[in-house]
Length: 336
Ligand code: HEC
Ligand SMILES: [Cu+2]
Image (cartoon, rainbow, N blue to C red):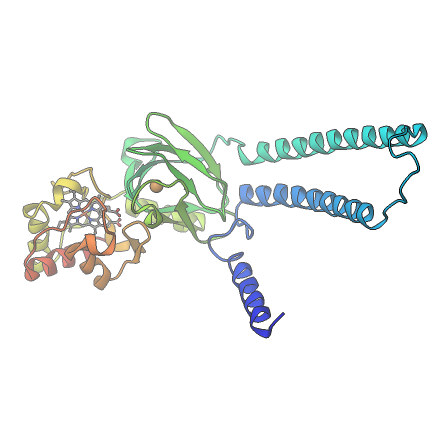
């Protein structure tokens, strides 16, 4: 093997391993459910590896230890036939036992993964081409609010997500916390998970849903319960009214230039439902479903030309004067 080939192999191995940790990995579980999934995977992997090695071993022995040709190749060898019959029977039984055993392991694992808890925090999530609509359902209507593309949850408490779709089939997947579940129009699917540690976990649509499927990501931010409570109380409030002249101009332009037809900003007349809720857009970490970090530069670039950043997405390029763009940007920035 040439040095180049060897180097390439070693390098590609490090890439493979580099994919196994961090904020989006089923092999680095941070939730009760993902831990169970990894454990099940591990048991299957070990059993399958042992069987594979045994099969390859027996096969190699058969190939290496050739028997001398018999005088009567077609004659019956009763003793040999009987022995083979017994071996085949044993192997058949062993296969059955292994398959049944793995079924039990898998079933037991699913009981953890799909366990339902009564005191779960409930979120309703609706998949859209190509973003995530998120509703926090409180015990009373005044505790119910909407956001998009970013889910904050408390650590240690089960979270129940009710999944639906507004258009095609999507799939909710946060590998570090739990397995996948589809979002389907007209059907409510449910998934529960519990984050053990505070952190930011990346989620991704896992069912091809059109042009911008790859840019349909989201962030799950797990916070300590008291911090989550503060965030929730804040998020539950309507948008703050702009404190300065430029902001007020931006708010008016948000309506005058058509943004309000598609976007909701609670506490203002903007009540559109076609696009993500922008009530607290200034405090979100990413924009356009995890496509870009949320900074004044990226937000401005998005409003100026969303089709350049995410070609084919359902927000049209709106004709804006540069002064108008600056005012709208300023307004959205302060919606913390
Ligand atoms: C025809 C409906 C429509 C109009 C009009 C519209 N948008 Fe959007 N907007 C969308 C959709 C749909 C998305 C989600 C795109 C995606 O991520 O795939 C979006 C995304 C956004 C986002 C990113 C939100 C997030 O959570 O990532 C911002 C900010 C935004 N729009 C601002 C504006 C502003 C400002 C205007 C007016 C100049 C405007 N939009 C006009 C439909 C619209
Ligand atoms: Cu999708």
